[in-house]
Length: 212
Image (tube, rainbow, N blue to C red; front, side, top):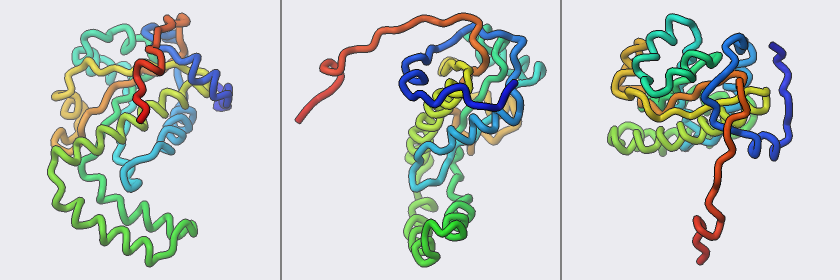
């Protein structure tokens, strides 16, 4: 498959997105192209730029067979998609703080004294925050990166489906991840749509917005 983006038309990307259940199983997204899509997704914002998202790309027949019983109500997406991306939130994300902010200094984005001040101010919080509070943070950040991933996929001519109905308490261990560290956010099937999907209705803005 080509690694060139199909479109950068924002309206086309957003308005053309559908939750696709059935994909063309003959279309496989290359590693290079998947990495480009994921790279665009990771431009999403996150709390103090800790980027707690972690991606498990389930693409081999063996991995899909392992996922299938954990996603009982989404068998078609698992079977026909090019891949299913399991998005997790890393509760120990602060361990990457030095790498992230050190790179910011190297690139000239901030002076070293600002980096040291930021890391010092956040260090206490990250070492004392409760698991539940950190879980809330990574779930929000995981939602942001997941939506951006789906839009990035559209720009490459692929479609997606966010999946919340799966065995969240088993998926990390099933794929060799530490379930106490990695919080499941959602599954996202990705591939070339075999049909156009269905349009859906959105509530009017005056129904969902409060002005004060």
